Length: 117
Length: 118
Image (cartoon, rainbow over the protein chains, first blue to last red):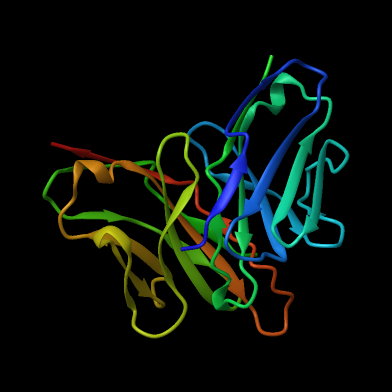
């Protein structure tokens, strides 16, 4: 099956620093990737839709200058949390939609747990 | 606007007994429905989907789900639960309105924790 790799799986950083999370589709191409945020024991909240070669589309209430998304190739999207603060601590999950498949099945990465001290 | 509801925060069942995790949806067009499972500190794993065709969909790990258009439901079921099925389950919907832009965005329910006890 299709594999999506996220890196790093865990990261701890100091308040005010920036953190980059990578999402790679390992065995398929994805023109569209999605970034979700999940708080403990809660559902996934869609943050933004990342489109290869164009600007990301952000959901209402998500600061695009805070959460920078780059989708430079058909297999890689990155999420950069800029000037991170403790309230940004969360579990971030990416998903990718393979090109050419029907019905929009998404494949998810294993998630990245960010802890901001 | 499309939405998904999972009315139960937690479902408890004894190992070997049948399980049901409930999901209802609301969409403006034809629904594409999904079930995913999440283990602690892990990403989501795809279980099954309904696009069209038979209302009873069979998926991974012995799970199945029944699409009921009149009740707008898509409940997840398994005839005999295993302790290893204990996890967080998410129902999701993707609205496939003809002619609309189709980015594959999924809307998730709030999740249901399944606890299977030995």
